[in-house]
Image 1 (cartoon, rainbow, N blue to C red):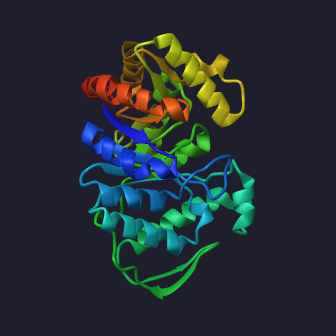
Image 2 (cartoon, rainbow, N blue to C red):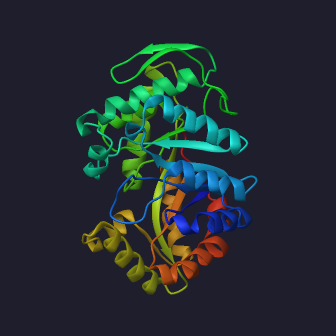
Length: 309
């Protein structure tokens, strides 16, 4: 099982990118919002900074929000980041919508976000060919233009898509290389992945063409009870809601042995990757991160996906 470290704190991006690569993480992940409840970076800026500080670790946008960008600009950012990183970009994208003010700020109707997402991906794929493009869409109009440079990874970097509903399954099955669901159980993952790959096969893709990842809010420590309390408190603070009743269902809390056991359940359900977000107070982040890197990560890499998809 491959593992990534999610970093949203802008001031920690470079330091933790270096740490993640040295510790053996497969991915450094960062998402984005224009405005949100706390400090959140721009994914392209954050990952470009991480690219400059590292050599090999893959760089995952988890996730970028195409509806907030003109489609051609988004394609330019994708190609530029893949180029400056030497072909290390993993392109996770989503429609957003959790914070409507950021859509208002850029003059985008929130109701159009899914149509904009798909159109932007279409434009991105076309421009990343490097060919001269003319395109007339609902939101994008291009007349005889050519993107240069194109990405190192052609036809474009691997695409990761989130979502837990039927519409998302259709989109993931048609377009994605990796499904990145959020707050799911092993059963939800297994059932969703089966439906996604059925869609993939209906669109002429291999029935096993889409892999699966999980986004895991994690607090792990030799003191399992402390890790559980800390993890719940941290996620409740982030989302401003009671999470105690959801902890055992959606969070990854406890000792390294307990968390590895839970991750193994997801591997059996079809997960190939886990993206770990540290659920701890800022003053305890280093303690938890070191436990993840030195006591949890080696075990994650030994977990095998046993599910025959």
